[in-house]
Length: 108
Image (cartoon, rainbow, N blue to C red; front, side, top):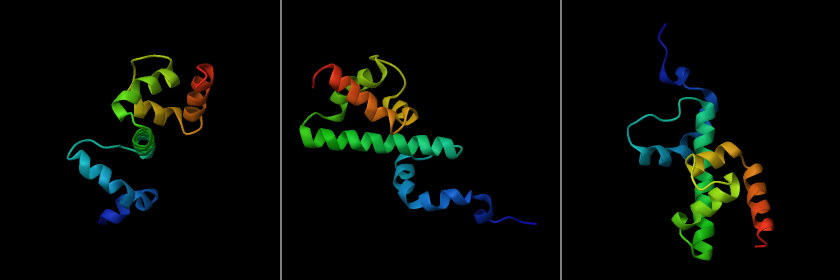
């Protein structure tokens, strides 16, 4: 029995093909996410990065100048894991909650 490519692809990934194509075209040849969980983390990190870029574009500071304050706000440290991957791990509920807490503490 021969399997075609369509039988080897996890059907849950099919709806994501178009939305992830641009990401993978920029990466070039190399190792990408190897499973569903890794793919979700990559997508979360990319969308968080895009959101911070949009805020910076609207208010002035570029992404490079906002990464350290965001890192300190969500982790309490100036160095650590790659920021957007960490934010993806932290999740869509806890990341904004930590940012809000940091802003409240500093009366911003």
